[in-house]
Image (tube, rainbow, N blue to C red):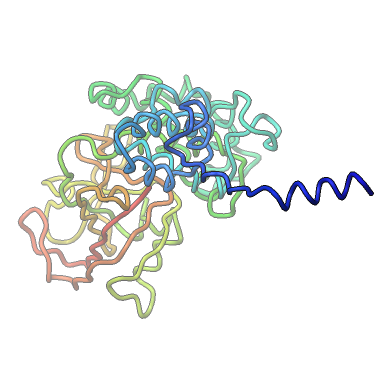
Length: 349
């Protein structure tokens, strides 16, 4: 009782002031960096605009977060400058859908799993999606498959890609993008390593070089956009109007207009690999025209060049319908084209 009385008299005879609020600017650099590491891409973007002193810390924090999501194997393709935060934003979105890169059992955080570890399953599922019977499928190794794409890989390497990145991109896009898209659409992590790798490779090169020209792809038919990703069906759906948008789940893109792709006004021709080389085959289908725009605070709005005449779009890009032109109302390579044309803009990261 005496002790309680003493404490009471002490408290009544003394005044106490509230502690001064702690400001981030007053934190030691090491502690401030830990705070930045806890922020998502949008928070880091805001932090980078506080002062110049924070910008270097934001870049380092963003790079560490990106590598944590995509694994050490992505270190060689980590982007720089503005594309770093865009890539981090995209990696966070992808992680929310399918998780981080997983180890062999697909449940734990990244432990060294790479796209090569998923190759056999990816290729098998891709062949099933193309109508092959499972019991008849024999999956070739990556080493056996790569010689068929020697020119594609060499062009990427000559354009500044690392050899291992060029091989990964080429095989996953040409031989497995349907399977990757199917897994992504249902939120499956069975190909998490490959999907993270493919997305990271495209994002690390976003915004490089000049703004791409308008590119074209067939909406349906062989290798048509809606054949590989049902989301593209929104363009031809009843009631679709300019301003309608959707999220694409596969790598998509188009080709520039030239004498091969638009030899006349009948429609778009696409390259098909055959025994004697490449043959451009006419597709009797509506055409999608991709219009690229400069980057903004909201992200990237341009396709990434991946072949001498082809440009690609990473998974989870938002596609927005800009206009619809009927057959004969538009031209490509000097020809009035007798197919409907859906002009779209894109945005990602």
